[in-house]
Structure formats: C-alpha cells, structure tokens
Amino acid sequence: MGRGPGTGTGVNGTGGGPPDGASPVIQSVQRAATVLDAFTVSRPRLTLNELTARLGVSKPTAHRYTKALRAADLLRFDAATGLYSLGPQILTLAAAVRSGHPIISASGPFLEALVNEVNETVVLSVWDGEGPIVVRVDDNANRLVRISIRAGSRLSLESAQGRLFCAFLDPAAVPGLAGRLRRSRELRAELAEIRARHLATNTPQATGVRTLAAPVFQDSGITAAIAIVGTTVTIPPDCDSPMATALVRVAAGLTRELGSAARAGGQAGPPGPSRPSTSTNRSLPP
Image 1: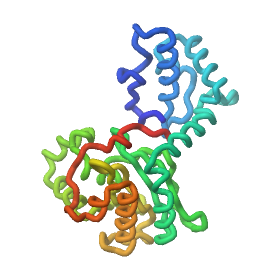
Image 2: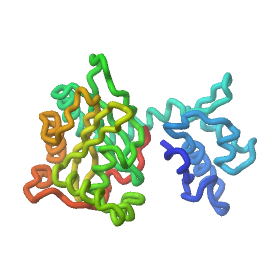
Image 3: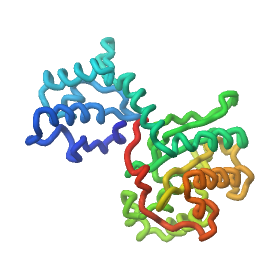
Image 4: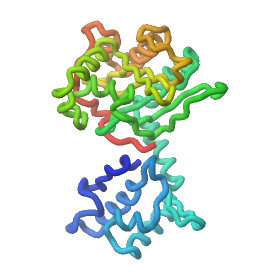
C-alpha cells in the first residue's frame, strides 16, 4: 500500500512524520499511517531502525507504534529475523476496498470470459495518480506455463498499460509526460496510434513476455486497462489478431457495462486525452 522505492512522501506529502502542530490524536493516526505507508511491494519487510527513520522519532516511540499496530493485526513481527511486515488485517481491508470498487466487481465476468477465450493471463489495472496499479488478475490455473503477476504491483509508464494511460489521460495528469511529448515526435505518434486503435502493446526484448492492453472508459475518461499477458510464442504481435480483437471487444463491453456506451462503441471516434476518472484517481492497496 506504500509507494514505490525512493518515492515515499509520508502521509503529509513532506516525508517522515506528521507536522509539529498536529494534535496528539491526529499525530498518532498520522504516525501509524506513516508506518504502514513505508511498506511497498519491493520492500515488504523492514527493521525497526528503518521504521524509526521513516517516522523521525526516537526508537522507543517507534516501538510503541509498532506494538499498537501489531495488536490490531496491521503489522507482523518475525522474532527470528527482527523484521516487520504488514499484518493479516491489511488483507481484509484490501479485500473490502476491492469489493467496494465498482470496476473490480463489474469486471469479473468480463475477465473470466476473456481468460476462457484466449487461455492467457488477464490483468485489470487502474491509475493511482503516479502509474498503473494491478487490482485484479485472472488466469487459467491448468496452464503449464503461467505469467505470474500480483495484485498490488505497480507498472511502469513503458508498459502497455502505462502507454494506454499516457494516451488517454491529460498529459498534466501523468508525471513528466508533458515534457516528454514536447521533446519526442515518436512518442506523440505512438500515443496517437494507441488512441486510434484502442490498443497498446509491449514486448520487452529481454523477457520474452508480450502484453496487449485495451482501455475501459467511464464518465469523462479512461478508468482502467485490461491486458492480456503471455509469452511471445503464445501472443501474436499483430494488432488485428483474433486475440487483440477479443481484448478490445471485451474492454468495450465492460465500458458499456459501466455506462459509457458511446465511448465503447466508438461511434463518435476514439476519445482524446482526458482527466482521470474520479473513481480511480486514488491509490488502492494490493
């Protein structure tokens, strides 16, 4: 539920603990949130020293907060390694968030149908203000070769999903995108093609993995990306392949389910860049 490595800003946007003028109760809540925010997908286990540094308090004070969070099952402590990690109550809260998020519950039948049709891993991602976050993964458990993707993973702007959001969001909503667009004619052309096709692709040379992604719209703009993830052997590179066509069709179906039939059918032409949908412009825990 934290941000990526090196980008943590604390709960007040300035790093470390809460502001000096906070009341005792508010300060306690802010400090507890700062502790939880310190954990990321890339750093799921931390020492007390690391948490103390993040809080900017004394070690005994940090220990009191970790003890209270452990009592609430929000933290776990491994005595053998001396490391803290997020507790089981986080999973309960994350499940509640996912259940309450309209697109996650609405997407279920669409993702399952797509998995059955293409027999590949299917991923749903939303925008959290900094990049795409995976919020749901569906795949065929009987496949011998499966691409492992975890809900809660942050994806780069270079991923197929990242490119989709770059294409359909207002450039000001994507960190650094406006400057890159001014400097790169190739990037402008790439994003224009994505908007025209409603499809983005990514094939990192070193991994042998290929991803196809299509946008889902709601209200005033893009709200999610559905992606098919597999190997370069099983996923064709063509944007008009049956697999790509199926992906675009399913994404359009989910858009209609969410109430944006005009965008789904493309009757008015591909939508241009827009502001992030208010239903997804927040961070979701894994």
